[in-house]
Image (cartoon, rainbow, N blue to C red; front, side, top):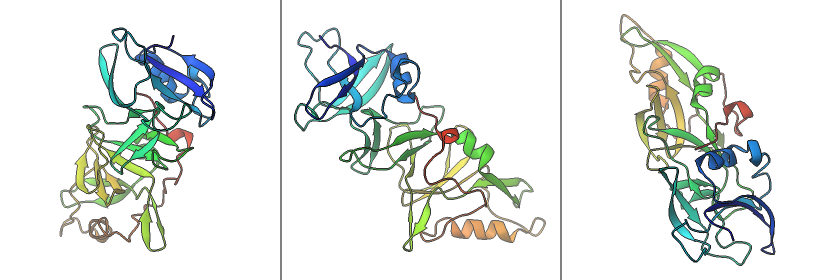
Length: 261
């Protein structure tokens, strides 16, 4: 009998091809999200995902669907499991962007921790699609590998910044990178959203236009900086890509991925 949170491979006919784990704890969930340990290669097939059959207090062991809060080792996690489909689809942990508002991976809602405040998440499709890739992004790598200096602001402080996480296509900015807050909501528009590392995100129409170490983007007579003035002017231009010469790849490489709970 299957109980608790289970990692399964279920084929198109609804048959369980592989049982990765049952009654998972938080460590197992972390490994599943990362594809590590006993979960190496989990998620490489579109038939891999998580299912929930209730906790020890549930006597029926029935497959749960819809929005469910699951307690693992004292911590609560929000999940969404498909309500529709036949044996092959019903109860599957959804994967991708839901209604343009939230992002799920194997059913778990991805959200920032209280210390992080904001996180960057890559998602290249919605929950109704197959083969969707969802990854948390390592902002430490963004800061170390993709930032550049633009000089000093009016206070004489050096301003470093990461350029737009996206590209201009047919006159419109597009991106599969999203800024997510502590409730799991995708940020649509935000000026200088401060994260747990004291850096600031600038978001316009869900596109992360830039990520800076300082939210003072003005120069002065003592510290004239035409480049900084242009940066401030153009960050909220929906047709302008903020570029610092270190372009973040449109699809994240392994160094940028930081999955896990």
